Length: 172
Image 1 (cartoon, helix red, strand yellow):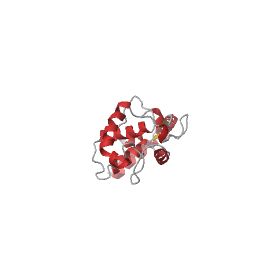
Image 2 (tube, one colour):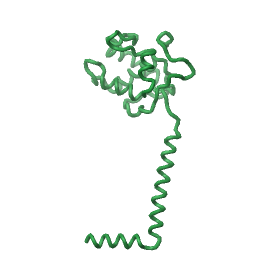
Image 3 (cartoon, one colour):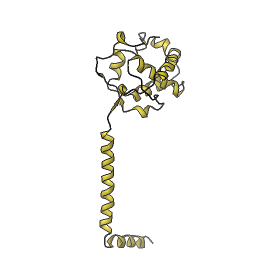
Image 4 (cartoon, one colour):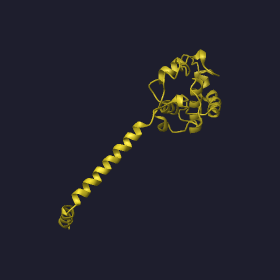
């Protein structure tokens, strides 16, 4: 049976026009993959300056932050010597080469320190939105989602028409 199948395939391939048809299919597939890759590369890189959270979400995050994070990181995000500051230069320096997805993943998997992963997915997204707002990143029209992978390509940028954010010039 195997010999018959092999013989039939060989005969089908040797049929006039079959190699040309196969080459066309392979070539067309390669071209489509190439064009899809170029389209993905042509998309502008997103940054936190594009507004990846809403003001309302950040407001909800403030309450969650105060309950779950404030006792260690301080009510003003200033840190306490044990827990690092989450505002100004320490925050921007820490994440300048990272992504919003990185922040979300770290917060979700390590905080609160005494019970990591214990908050709802919404609460973690809201807290990260609050951190972004307090570091003067602009709000947008869409809420920050719950999945860190969705934001792994949303980069932080040190400059967006101005100097790095410092605690003294943050907006409340």
